[in-house]
Length: 398
Image 1 (tube, rainbow, N blue to C red):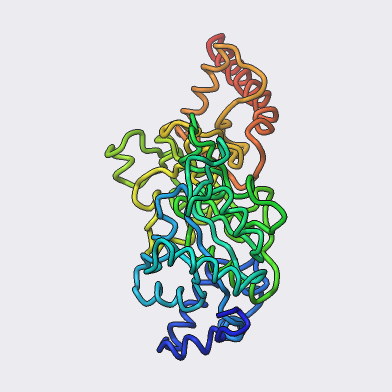
Image 2 (image 1 turned 45 degrees about the vertical axis):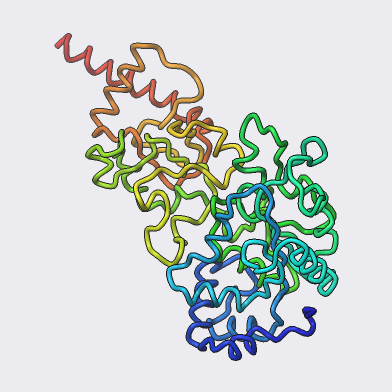
């Protein structure tokens, strides 16, 4: 059935026995996922969003799998309430999905061709998994065709392409060194089509639905950042809204799993948390509608799955530079990255930090790079140390 012949979302939900209350709950989730950044949810009430979404025809979605673990599909289905998963599949028309469809082999290939031909130029292509590009894609074939060719062919007739998960966005786990298959993200293979990257391992399923519904209701994709990620979902780093941020500001850190700090819920930065450089909304938009269901919420450091140059590029317990959180004027900097301190001056600065209360890791809302902060602060630190040194000498002479 072509997109033009499909029922509107509201009509399909009624025919499927979905209650108005459930649909409004679904729309409320969209509002929480994207309170700003989408035309669909901007300055609209819950009833207005439901009206806009309900009157459009169910968007045709073709979902392809390549080098993946199927985790992104799982996050779409394993919601806390079973009716939410059913509702998701009622809102979109999932016309091809290798994991969920009953057909296989020749029947599956026929279903894919039919979905493409029936909705040519109108369907949204979702790609899950990295695409092996080395040696002309010989490492993966679908129906005797290299996966890279399948991706290009299906994308050529799509209205838009969504790369879901870190693997599809930029290669993910398959691209980790030494990357024997030459795994790459979708935008390295597909061109000439609008592409949205939704990195995450896995990403929040409502990010996908928000992008799809924004496109079919408003006729355009949401604003993207320089990496092709929608700004409404990746505009801030986790560190800014982390529930453990107060402990970071106060200098309270867990130093080992199971130690006192870890048991008390202190900051996980010292254990390798990548939250200060990871753009994602995990801290405010939890998975499966269950509060606290995300790595830091369960006592595990963020490992930066939305950042190409962090996850699988850095050591698990390696700490990241602090770029977006610098200390206020009353505390020493987190890092002194510019200038230099002599051994004696450094010792005095350390003593000053201890005298101030041991809070050497206090951050403020004044956002600038650690390099900029270091240039401005090192000279002040040295001057303050020299001042204290002068007072100490004066007391000895008395």
